[in-house]
Image 1 (cartoon, rainbow, N blue to C red):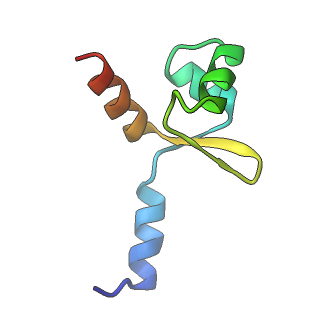
Image 2 (tube, rainbow, N blue to C red):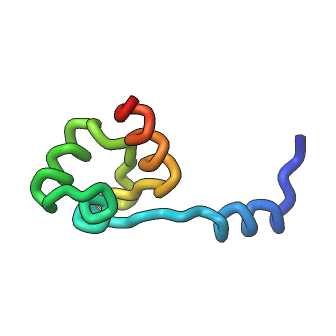
Length: 69
């Protein structure tokens, strides 16, 4: 399978990323300190990129949808 440059650019545009612990916390209805703790302990699916937390909105939705079952 080959990946074209245009394909990569399109897929990057379609990502719905949330940057920063505060913004991720707002998206999942957590106070900033609780969100930061959840991120640091791995309780929320996210990664650190360049020293900042980043999470995919769809991954968060699926994670919380699965944990609610």
